[in-house]
Image (tube, rainbow, N blue to C red):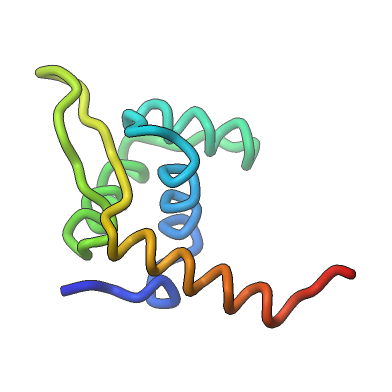
Length: 96
């Protein structure tokens, strides 16, 4: 079951954008980038359940970097969902 981006929480959309901006980031890398950008602490209990939901939704894939660390990457469905979302945002808001 593929979930549409508009059905996600804002935090989950932020996760997709961060994952898209890195090459197979670890969960810690994702959390660090969100903390830097949003200027707030991202707890383990918030991060990983949301990443798992994105995996279950078919938007993100999860793989092993090593025995303790996973990586995350957008699936083709996740990439297409972000493209559609960006088109929609661009249609609504043109800062020029």
